[in-house]
Length: 391
Image (cartoon, rainbow, N blue to C red; front, side, top):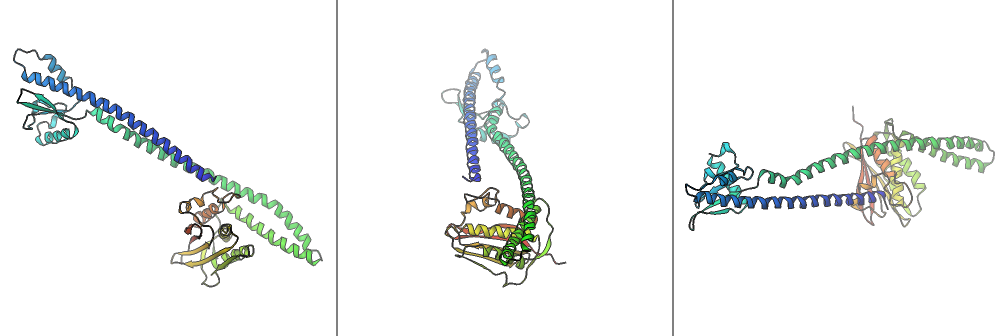
């Protein structure tokens, strides 16, 4: 299984686990809030009973306990109205004392309480009633919003942690890339020196066949030297030179064309358009095209099809399109194909497109992306390279 598909499943699993924790926390918190709400309702109903007793009491009744009970309510905001809905200011509790004389403030608070809960009816006699309105205490209000505050803090923490982790991961990957590239260049260098020496020996032979073999070996040694040069440039800023794209791309195209299956038709327009110049590292740019052409050939599962390389330009960019008639890429994979380790093949490290993206975007300040693709119909990769700025 592709490592990025495994990573995707891990992320989904962690997301589901996080959602489970959040939902469980919300349910538990909601249960606590409901219990506290029920307790406050009972408290308000008792306060209503006490108010009713106070209002109906005569002058000789001892109401010290009732008044003490009401005074002890320092949390639940209360408003009592008469039957006509007029607010009885002397019976309001736990509201802003500075605004208690403001009718607009009381109307606003009363409207809020009416939306919150059904009032408690205070019966004065069989025909006269008053109504006790209330809303959540500050503690209950905080308890209701606490899970969302907690969720926000956790989300912020996870986001910061994620970006910090990804930054550290990218830094580590960069070190791995550089180390791998330089070690590869170093390892290739040793057999190259030996091959070069043996090529010189064979070239001095008088036999024609031996000289032909030496020439072919020399060609492959040159190719190995180019590969070593490419890897040696990874990890350091390459030297940019004004490069004639038509010539540079055509050389790589013809090299790959000679090695492609006969049933694969390869075409280009590199000799048919005006010369286009860009500041570039030609060896690295050739490497990118080689990777794209290799991927295009690998996409021909039947061993036949067509590949085209076209070069064009806009006012600001040179545009390189590499199109094949292979198996195509699903839209969900457009970004993932450039990640290190991604590969649709059973063999290979899945580094070609990742290296290509690094070369184009980090070294050449360009863009490389999947321009078009459809499963079973083929894929088109596009490269945008900034053109030389005129003095």
